[in-house]
Image 1 (tube, one colour):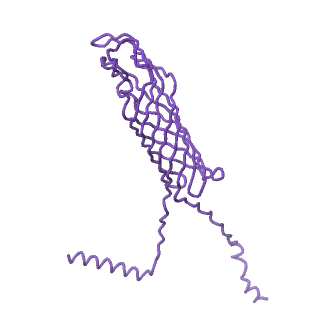
Image 2: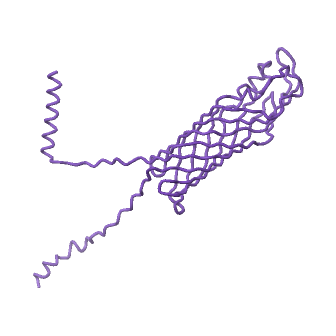
Image 3: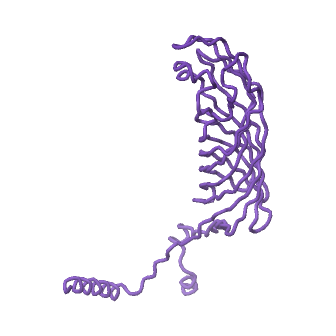
Length: 287
């Protein structure tokens, strides 16, 4: 117990001695407040499915679906022009497409050509993470930004408005394609937007984003054919969703960083004058 107390006493003594030798020295510490914006928005989406046909399936994109969504987010600024963004939102996905099974002969039974059409409407709950890069005020009270995000989503609903019947009997009268949509989704997106300062603590913004689903939207490869054909299941096409979103919203700004004014340039004394011209008092004495 005595050794720690002795060491502490020596340390305090050294600090006191150094403080007495150097005097009082105040070191300013920059504790600038972090700028954080809180936002809410509504969105409109136009989405469709895309896929590459395989040896077993021929895929065709038959059109897009529309939907709405919205959510909340937070922008945490590292600098006046760069912010980290995180949020919670819902979004509609889906599209119209058809698939034709080529009639490959499986191990256990021969299945003829099968065609099916779908009109799939899904909704996901997303958690996006990303970065936003802002310009200065290009227009009065207005600045522009670009953003890139990656989002993890979970399925909240899926409905197939297309045909649930096929060109041949599948032997599965209760089959619902919407039951085989993957529960998890991951998508990447990029977009641009504009932000306008309305009040001291209120901004409005509008943006457009393009999103692409990284993983397949199908929990099982395609439909009933895959249940009886191991090869068709392993070689079925991956189904990805692509969407364009338009977003409009408001941001609450509790603290706004004030731009630092540019330093005023100080006039420099001419080196020629200071080296060769005598002081004014000396000139008067010489007269």
